[in-house]
Image 1 (cartoon, rainbow, N blue to C red):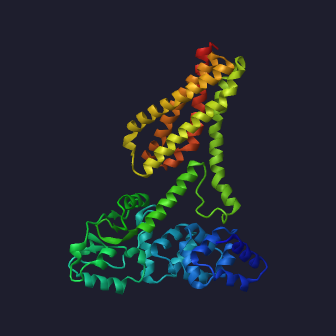
Image 2: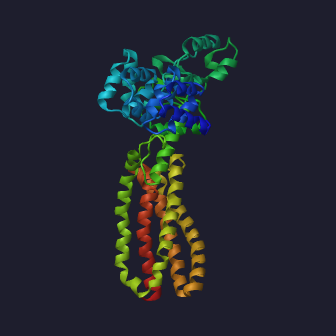
Image 3: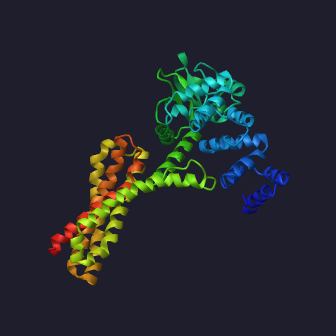
Length: 446
Protein backbone atom coordinates (compact mmCIF):
# COMPACT_ATOMS: atom_id res chain seq x y z
CA UNK A 1 0.00 0.00 0.00
CA UNK A 2 1.42 3.45 -0.91
CA UNK A 3 2.88 5.44 1.94
CA UNK A 4 0.68 8.42 1.00
CA UNK A 5 -2.47 6.38 1.66
CA UNK A 6 -1.18 5.26 5.07
CA UNK A 7 -0.20 8.76 6.12
CA UNK A 8 -3.42 10.19 4.76
CA UNK A 9 -5.67 7.85 6.75
CA UNK A 10 -3.71 8.40 9.95
CA UNK A 11 -3.86 12.16 9.50
CA UNK A 12 -7.65 12.03 8.98
CA UNK A 13 -8.02 10.09 12.24
CA UNK A 14 -5.83 12.57 14.13
CA UNK A 15 -8.03 15.42 12.86
CA UNK A 16 -11.20 13.50 13.87
CA UNK A 17 -12.35 13.26 10.26
CA UNK A 18 -13.62 9.70 10.72
CA UNK A 19 -16.05 9.66 7.78
CA UNK A 20 -13.23 10.45 5.37
CA UNK A 21 -10.99 7.85 7.05
CA UNK A 22 -13.71 5.20 6.71
CA UNK A 23 -14.05 6.00 3.00
CA UNK A 24 -10.30 5.52 2.54
CA UNK A 25 -10.21 2.27 4.51
CA UNK A 26 -13.06 0.76 2.52
CA UNK A 27 -10.99 1.09 -0.65
CA UNK A 28 -8.44 -1.36 0.73
CA UNK A 29 -8.64 -5.18 0.73
CA UNK A 30 -8.38 -6.94 4.09
CA UNK A 31 -4.76 -7.95 3.53
CA UNK A 32 -3.68 -4.34 2.96
CA UNK A 33 -5.67 -3.19 5.99
CA UNK A 34 -3.82 -5.69 8.21
CA UNK A 35 -0.48 -4.55 6.78
CA UNK A 36 -1.50 -0.94 7.50
CA UNK A 37 -2.46 -1.72 11.11
CA UNK A 38 0.85 -3.55 11.59
CA UNK A 39 2.64 -0.28 10.84
CA UNK A 40 0.51 1.88 13.13
CA UNK A 41 1.34 3.00 16.66
CA UNK A 42 -0.26 0.80 19.39
CA UNK A 43 -2.74 3.51 20.47
CA UNK A 44 -3.94 4.02 16.88
CA UNK A 45 -4.83 0.39 16.16
CA UNK A 46 -8.09 0.10 18.17
CA UNK A 47 -9.36 3.43 16.78
CA UNK A 48 -8.75 2.38 13.18
CA UNK A 49 -10.10 -1.12 13.77
CA UNK A 50 -13.45 0.27 14.96
CA UNK A 51 -13.78 2.10 11.62
CA UNK A 52 -13.65 -1.11 9.56
CA UNK A 53 -16.70 -2.74 8.02
CA UNK A 54 -17.80 -5.79 9.98
CA UNK A 55 -16.74 -8.42 7.41
CA UNK A 56 -13.37 -6.75 6.87
CA UNK A 57 -12.84 -6.45 10.62
CA UNK A 58 -13.49 -10.19 11.06
CA UNK A 59 -11.01 -11.14 8.31
CA UNK A 60 -8.37 -8.77 9.67
CA UNK A 61 -8.84 -9.98 13.24
CA UNK A 62 -8.65 -13.63 12.17
CA UNK A 63 -5.27 -13.09 10.47
CA UNK A 64 -3.70 -11.22 13.40
CA UNK A 65 -1.15 -12.81 15.72
CA UNK A 66 -2.67 -14.04 19.03
CA UNK A 67 -0.86 -11.35 21.05
CA UNK A 68 -2.16 -8.68 18.67
CA UNK A 69 -5.66 -10.07 19.13
CA UNK A 70 -5.27 -10.02 22.90
CA UNK A 71 -4.05 -6.40 22.88
CA UNK A 72 -6.96 -5.37 20.71
CA UNK A 73 -9.59 -7.22 22.75
CA UNK A 74 -8.49 -5.32 25.86
CA UNK A 75 -9.56 -2.07 24.16
CA UNK A 76 -12.80 -3.08 22.43
CA UNK A 77 -16.35 -3.25 23.77
CA UNK A 78 -17.61 -6.59 25.09
CA UNK A 79 -20.21 -7.07 22.37
CA UNK A 80 -17.75 -6.64 19.54
CA UNK A 81 -15.17 -8.80 21.33
CA UNK A 82 -17.58 -11.69 21.74
CA UNK A 83 -18.63 -11.50 18.10
CA UNK A 84 -15.02 -11.54 16.87
CA UNK A 85 -14.08 -14.38 19.21
CA UNK A 86 -17.06 -16.45 18.11
CA UNK A 87 -16.04 -16.16 14.45
CA UNK A 88 -12.58 -17.62 15.02
CA UNK A 89 -11.87 -21.29 14.38
CA UNK A 90 -11.60 -23.40 17.51
CA UNK A 91 -7.81 -23.69 17.12
CA UNK A 92 -7.48 -19.89 16.91
CA UNK A 93 -9.75 -19.51 19.94
CA UNK A 94 -7.53 -21.88 21.93
CA UNK A 95 -4.35 -19.98 21.00
CA UNK A 96 -5.94 -16.62 21.85
CA UNK A 97 -7.11 -17.88 25.25
CA UNK A 98 -3.48 -18.66 26.10
CA UNK A 99 -2.59 -14.97 25.65
CA UNK A 100 -5.40 -13.56 27.77
CA UNK A 101 -6.08 -13.19 31.50
CA UNK A 102 -7.97 -16.21 32.84
CA UNK A 103 -11.03 -14.14 33.83
CA UNK A 104 -11.41 -12.64 30.35
CA UNK A 105 -10.79 -15.99 28.68
CA UNK A 106 -13.48 -17.66 30.78
CA UNK A 107 -15.99 -14.95 29.91
CA UNK A 108 -15.32 -15.36 26.19
CA UNK A 109 -15.59 -19.15 26.34
CA UNK A 110 -18.85 -18.91 28.30
CA UNK A 111 -20.25 -16.69 25.54
CA UNK A 112 -19.87 -19.43 22.92
CA UNK A 113 -22.58 -21.90 22.02
CA UNK A 114 -22.43 -25.36 23.65
CA UNK A 115 -20.90 -27.11 20.61
CA UNK A 116 -18.27 -24.41 19.96
CA UNK A 117 -17.43 -24.23 23.68
CA UNK A 118 -16.95 -28.00 23.87
CA UNK A 119 -14.74 -27.95 20.77
CA UNK A 120 -12.53 -25.15 22.13
CA UNK A 121 -12.36 -26.90 25.50
CA UNK A 122 -11.25 -30.13 23.82
CA UNK A 123 -8.35 -28.37 22.08
CA UNK A 124 -7.36 -26.57 25.28
CA UNK A 125 -6.85 -29.98 26.85
CA UNK A 126 -3.76 -30.54 24.68
CA UNK A 127 -0.32 -29.03 25.46
CA UNK A 128 0.17 -25.46 24.28
CA UNK A 129 2.92 -26.36 21.78
CA UNK A 130 1.17 -29.46 20.40
CA UNK A 131 -0.46 -29.96 17.03
CA UNK A 132 -3.71 -30.66 18.89
CA UNK A 133 -4.00 -26.92 19.59
CA UNK A 134 -3.72 -26.16 15.85
CA UNK A 135 -6.11 -28.74 14.46
CA UNK A 136 -9.00 -27.73 12.21
CA UNK A 137 -12.34 -29.50 12.13
CA UNK A 138 -12.58 -31.90 9.19
CA UNK A 139 -15.82 -30.72 7.50
CA UNK A 140 -16.04 -33.83 5.32
CA UNK A 141 -15.05 -37.39 6.30
CA UNK A 142 -15.18 -39.85 3.43
CA UNK A 143 -15.91 -43.58 3.49
CA UNK A 144 -13.95 -45.99 1.32
CA UNK A 145 -17.08 -47.58 -0.17
CA UNK A 146 -18.59 -44.25 -1.29
CA UNK A 147 -18.79 -43.43 -4.97
CA UNK A 148 -16.90 -40.40 -6.25
CA UNK A 149 -20.19 -38.72 -7.09
CA UNK A 150 -21.50 -39.19 -3.55
CA UNK A 151 -18.23 -37.94 -2.07
CA UNK A 152 -18.38 -34.75 -4.17
CA UNK A 153 -21.97 -34.21 -3.11
CA UNK A 154 -20.88 -34.39 0.54
CA UNK A 155 -18.19 -31.81 -0.18
CA UNK A 156 -20.76 -29.48 -1.74
CA UNK A 157 -23.20 -29.90 1.15
CA UNK A 158 -20.81 -29.82 4.12
CA UNK A 159 -17.74 -28.03 2.80
CA UNK A 160 -18.87 -24.42 3.18
CA UNK A 161 -16.99 -23.82 6.43
CA UNK A 162 -13.22 -23.96 6.54
CA UNK A 163 -12.18 -24.40 2.90
CA UNK A 164 -8.51 -24.77 3.83
CA UNK A 165 -9.34 -28.14 5.35
CA UNK A 166 -10.76 -29.42 2.05
CA UNK A 167 -7.50 -29.66 0.07
CA UNK A 168 -7.08 -33.25 1.26
CA UNK A 169 -10.00 -35.24 2.65
CA UNK A 170 -9.62 -37.98 5.27
CA UNK A 171 -11.10 -41.42 4.69
CA UNK A 172 -12.31 -43.02 7.92
CA UNK A 173 -13.42 -46.50 8.88
CA UNK A 174 -15.02 -47.87 12.01
CA UNK A 175 -14.89 -45.62 15.10
CA UNK A 176 -13.63 -42.77 12.86
CA UNK A 177 -10.15 -44.25 12.60
CA UNK A 178 -8.16 -42.87 9.64
CA UNK A 179 -7.63 -45.41 6.84
CA UNK A 180 -6.54 -43.12 4.00
CA UNK A 181 -6.64 -39.70 2.40
CA UNK A 182 -7.82 -38.31 -0.94
CA UNK A 183 -6.80 -35.00 -2.51
CA UNK A 184 -9.75 -32.90 -3.58
CA UNK A 185 -8.20 -32.18 -6.99
CA UNK A 186 -7.99 -35.89 -7.72
CA UNK A 187 -11.55 -36.43 -6.53
CA UNK A 188 -12.99 -33.73 -8.80
CA UNK A 189 -11.33 -35.15 -11.92
CA UNK A 190 -12.11 -38.82 -11.27
CA UNK A 191 -14.85 -40.91 -12.86
CA UNK A 192 -18.06 -40.18 -10.87
CA UNK A 193 -18.85 -43.88 -10.87
CA UNK A 194 -15.57 -44.88 -9.30
CA UNK A 195 -15.02 -45.45 -5.59
CA UNK A 196 -13.16 -43.46 -2.97
CA UNK A 197 -11.09 -46.53 -2.08
CA UNK A 198 -9.62 -46.62 -5.60
CA UNK A 199 -8.38 -43.02 -5.21
CA UNK A 200 -7.18 -42.93 -1.64
CA UNK A 201 -3.54 -42.97 -0.58
CA UNK A 202 -2.10 -44.16 2.71
CA UNK A 203 -2.54 -41.43 5.32
CA UNK A 204 0.37 -40.00 7.27
CA UNK A 205 -1.32 -39.20 10.60
CA UNK A 206 0.10 -37.78 13.84
CA UNK A 207 -1.18 -37.99 17.44
CA UNK A 208 -2.60 -34.76 18.86
CA UNK A 209 0.17 -34.57 21.46
CA UNK A 210 2.90 -34.26 18.79
CA UNK A 211 4.80 -30.97 18.86
CA UNK A 212 3.37 -28.54 16.33
CA UNK A 213 6.83 -27.83 14.86
CA UNK A 214 7.46 -31.56 14.33
CA UNK A 215 4.10 -31.92 12.55
CA UNK A 216 4.84 -28.84 10.44
CA UNK A 217 8.22 -30.24 9.39
CA UNK A 218 6.59 -33.54 8.48
CA UNK A 219 3.97 -31.72 6.42
CA UNK A 220 6.66 -29.72 4.61
CA UNK A 221 9.05 -32.65 4.07
CA UNK A 222 6.34 -34.94 2.66
CA UNK A 223 4.75 -32.10 0.61
CA UNK A 224 1.33 -32.80 2.16
CA UNK A 225 -1.73 -30.58 1.76
CA UNK A 226 -3.14 -31.77 5.07
CA UNK A 227 -2.11 -34.02 7.92
CA UNK A 228 -4.78 -36.00 9.83
CA UNK A 229 -4.52 -35.55 13.61
CA UNK A 230 -5.76 -38.36 15.84
CA UNK A 231 -6.42 -38.97 19.52
CA UNK A 232 -4.67 -41.66 21.56
CA UNK A 233 -6.98 -44.32 20.15
CA UNK A 234 -6.32 -43.38 16.52
CA UNK A 235 -9.65 -41.61 16.00
CA UNK A 236 -9.64 -38.54 13.77
CA UNK A 237 -10.09 -35.25 15.60
CA UNK A 238 -9.24 -32.88 12.73
CA UNK A 239 -6.80 -31.79 10.05
CA UNK A 240 -3.52 -29.87 10.22
CA UNK A 241 -3.23 -28.02 6.91
CA UNK A 242 -0.27 -26.73 4.94
CA UNK A 243 -1.36 -23.17 5.85
CA UNK A 244 -1.12 -24.11 9.54
CA UNK A 245 2.30 -25.68 8.93
CA UNK A 246 3.61 -22.52 7.25
CA UNK A 247 2.39 -20.43 10.17
CA UNK A 248 4.09 -22.70 12.72
CA UNK A 249 7.37 -22.71 10.80
CA UNK A 250 7.27 -18.91 10.49
CA UNK A 251 6.68 -18.55 14.24
CA UNK A 252 9.50 -20.96 15.09
CA UNK A 253 11.89 -19.23 12.69
CA UNK A 254 11.04 -15.84 14.22
CA UNK A 255 11.50 -17.19 17.74
CA UNK A 256 14.87 -18.78 16.91
CA UNK A 257 16.10 -15.61 15.23
CA UNK A 258 15.13 -13.49 18.24
CA UNK A 259 16.70 -15.78 20.82
CA UNK A 260 19.84 -16.25 18.78
CA UNK A 261 20.21 -12.48 18.92
CA UNK A 262 19.65 -12.33 22.67
CA UNK A 263 16.00 -11.21 22.82
CA UNK A 264 12.54 -12.67 23.31
CA UNK A 265 10.15 -12.88 20.31
CA UNK A 266 7.63 -10.02 20.24
CA UNK A 267 4.60 -11.88 18.90
CA UNK A 268 3.51 -8.59 17.31
CA UNK A 269 4.62 -6.39 14.38
CA UNK A 270 7.54 -4.17 15.39
CA UNK A 271 5.92 -0.77 14.80
CA UNK A 272 2.74 -1.68 16.68
CA UNK A 273 4.66 -3.02 19.70
CA UNK A 274 4.79 -0.67 22.73
CA UNK A 275 8.24 0.63 23.61
CA UNK A 276 8.12 -0.92 27.09
CA UNK A 277 7.35 -4.30 25.55
CA UNK A 278 10.39 -3.95 23.31
CA UNK A 279 12.49 -3.12 26.36
CA UNK A 280 11.21 -6.09 28.37
CA UNK A 281 11.96 -8.42 25.44
CA UNK A 282 15.63 -7.45 25.62
CA UNK A 283 16.51 -6.43 29.18
CA UNK A 284 16.60 -9.91 30.75
CA UNK A 285 18.97 -11.23 28.11
CA UNK A 286 21.21 -8.18 28.43
CA UNK A 287 21.45 -8.71 32.18
CA UNK A 288 22.27 -12.39 31.74
CA UNK A 289 24.93 -11.62 29.14
CA UNK A 290 26.36 -8.81 31.26
CA UNK A 291 26.84 -11.26 34.12
CA UNK A 292 28.42 -13.73 31.69
CA UNK A 293 30.76 -11.04 30.38
CA UNK A 294 32.30 -10.75 33.84
CA UNK A 295 34.09 -14.02 32.98
CA UNK A 296 36.13 -12.08 30.44
CA UNK A 297 36.95 -9.43 33.03
CA UNK A 298 38.07 -12.13 35.47
CA UNK A 299 40.34 -13.68 32.85
CA UNK A 300 41.97 -10.31 32.10
CA UNK A 301 42.48 -9.75 35.81
CA UNK A 302 44.17 -13.15 36.25
CA UNK A 303 46.57 -12.42 33.40
CA UNK A 304 47.11 -8.75 34.30
CA UNK A 305 50.80 -9.37 35.07
CA UNK A 306 51.31 -10.94 31.63
CA UNK A 307 49.78 -7.89 29.95
CA UNK A 308 52.00 -5.56 31.96
CA UNK A 309 55.12 -7.41 30.79
CA UNK A 310 54.15 -7.19 27.13
CA UNK A 311 51.55 -4.50 26.45
CA UNK A 312 51.39 -5.35 22.74
CA UNK A 313 49.37 -8.46 23.62
CA UNK A 314 46.43 -6.25 24.58
CA UNK A 315 46.18 -5.01 20.98
CA UNK A 316 45.09 -8.45 19.80
CA UNK A 317 42.45 -9.12 22.49
CA UNK A 318 39.56 -7.82 20.28
CA UNK A 319 40.80 -10.02 17.41
CA UNK A 320 40.85 -13.15 19.57
CA UNK A 321 37.42 -12.42 21.09
CA UNK A 322 35.80 -11.50 17.79
CA UNK A 323 37.17 -14.47 15.85
CA UNK A 324 36.18 -16.98 18.52
CA UNK A 325 32.69 -15.57 18.95
CA UNK A 326 32.02 -15.43 15.20
CA UNK A 327 33.28 -18.97 14.63
CA UNK A 328 31.16 -20.33 17.47
CA UNK A 329 28.08 -18.46 16.27
CA UNK A 330 28.47 -19.81 12.75
CA UNK A 331 28.65 -23.39 14.01
CA UNK A 332 25.73 -22.93 16.41
CA UNK A 333 23.51 -21.35 13.76
CA UNK A 334 24.26 -24.15 11.31
CA UNK A 335 23.55 -26.92 13.81
CA UNK A 336 20.43 -25.19 15.20
CA UNK A 337 19.04 -25.00 11.68
CA UNK A 338 19.92 -28.65 11.06
CA UNK A 339 18.07 -29.59 14.27
CA UNK A 340 15.00 -27.66 13.15
CA UNK A 341 15.01 -29.52 9.83
CA UNK A 342 15.61 -32.84 11.64
CA UNK A 343 18.85 -33.31 9.68
CA UNK A 344 20.66 -34.04 12.95
CA UNK A 345 19.53 -35.30 16.35
CA UNK A 346 21.10 -35.32 19.82
CA UNK A 347 22.36 -38.87 19.26
CA UNK A 348 24.51 -37.48 16.42
CA UNK A 349 26.57 -35.43 18.90
CA UNK A 350 29.83 -37.34 18.28
CA UNK A 351 29.54 -37.00 14.50
CA UNK A 352 28.75 -33.30 14.80
CA UNK A 353 31.68 -32.77 17.18
CA UNK A 354 34.13 -34.45 14.81
CA UNK A 355 32.85 -32.51 11.82
CA UNK A 356 33.01 -29.16 13.59
CA UNK A 357 36.43 -30.03 15.02
CA UNK A 358 37.76 -30.48 11.49
CA UNK A 359 35.97 -27.39 10.18
CA UNK A 360 37.25 -25.28 13.07
CA UNK A 361 40.80 -26.58 12.66
CA UNK A 362 40.76 -25.81 8.93
CA UNK A 363 39.36 -22.31 9.49
CA UNK A 364 41.90 -21.74 12.26
CA UNK A 365 44.77 -22.85 10.03
CA UNK A 366 43.73 -20.37 7.34
CA UNK A 367 43.17 -17.46 9.71
CA UNK A 368 46.16 -18.39 11.85
CA UNK A 369 48.46 -18.41 8.85
CA UNK A 370 47.26 -14.97 7.81
CA UNK A 371 47.52 -13.70 11.40
CA UNK A 372 51.07 -15.00 11.73
CA UNK A 373 52.13 -13.20 8.54
CA UNK A 374 50.54 -9.85 9.37
CA UNK A 375 51.47 -9.76 13.07
CA UNK A 376 54.98 -11.04 12.31
CA UNK A 377 55.69 -8.31 9.79
CA UNK A 378 54.61 -5.50 12.13
CA UNK A 379 55.37 -6.80 15.65
CA UNK A 380 57.97 -9.53 15.23
CA UNK A 381 57.73 -13.21 14.39
CA UNK A 382 57.46 -14.29 18.02
CA UNK A 383 54.24 -12.29 18.37
CA UNK A 384 53.15 -13.62 14.98
CA UNK A 385 53.57 -17.18 16.21
CA UNK A 386 51.46 -16.44 19.30
CA UNK A 387 48.65 -14.96 17.20
CA UNK A 388 48.75 -17.78 14.67
CA UNK A 389 48.59 -20.57 17.26
CA UNK A 390 45.89 -18.71 19.22
CA UNK A 391 43.64 -18.32 16.19
CA UNK A 392 44.13 -21.98 15.32
CA UNK A 393 43.21 -23.05 18.86
CA UNK A 394 40.33 -20.62 19.32
CA UNK A 395 38.65 -21.49 16.01
CA UNK A 396 38.92 -25.21 16.73
CA UNK A 397 37.48 -24.78 20.22
CA UNK A 398 34.74 -22.33 19.20
CA UNK A 399 33.45 -24.43 16.31
CA UNK A 400 33.34 -27.56 18.47
CA UNK A 401 31.56 -25.84 21.36
CA UNK A 402 29.21 -24.00 19.02
CA UNK A 403 28.21 -27.25 17.32
CA UNK A 404 27.60 -29.17 20.53
CA UNK A 405 25.68 -26.65 22.62
CA UNK A 406 22.46 -26.65 20.53
CA UNK A 407 22.46 -30.45 20.71
CA UNK A 408 22.87 -30.27 24.47
CA UNK A 409 19.95 -27.86 24.68
CA UNK A 410 17.76 -30.17 22.62
CA UNK A 411 18.75 -33.13 24.80
CA UNK A 412 17.70 -31.45 28.05
CA UNK A 413 14.51 -30.03 26.54
CA UNK A 414 15.62 -26.40 26.18
CA UNK A 415 15.18 -24.37 22.99
CA UNK A 416 18.48 -24.86 21.08
CA UNK A 417 18.38 -21.19 20.05
CA UNK A 418 18.78 -20.24 23.71
CA UNK A 419 22.07 -22.16 23.73
CA UNK A 420 23.14 -20.40 20.57
CA UNK A 421 24.89 -17.13 19.86
CA UNK A 422 24.71 -15.09 23.11
CA UNK A 423 25.88 -17.80 25.50
CA UNK A 424 28.42 -19.21 23.09
CA UNK A 425 29.97 -15.78 22.55
CA UNK A 426 30.32 -15.25 26.30
CA UNK A 427 31.82 -18.71 26.93
CA UNK A 428 34.18 -18.68 23.96
CA UNK A 429 35.39 -15.15 24.78
CA UNK A 430 36.60 -16.28 28.20
CA UNK A 431 38.10 -19.59 27.04
CA UNK A 432 39.71 -17.92 24.03
CA UNK A 433 41.50 -15.40 26.24
CA UNK A 434 42.73 -18.16 28.54
CA UNK A 435 44.23 -19.98 25.54
CA UNK A 436 45.71 -16.73 24.22
CA UNK A 437 47.57 -15.88 27.40
CA UNK A 438 48.69 -19.46 28.06
CA UNK A 439 50.16 -19.67 24.54
CA UNK A 440 51.83 -16.26 24.97
CA UNK A 441 53.39 -17.33 28.27
CA UNK A 442 54.69 -20.56 26.76
CA UNK A 443 56.16 -19.06 23.58
CA UNK A 444 57.43 -15.78 25.01
CA UNK A 445 58.69 -17.12 28.35
CA UNK A 446 56.64 -14.61 30.39
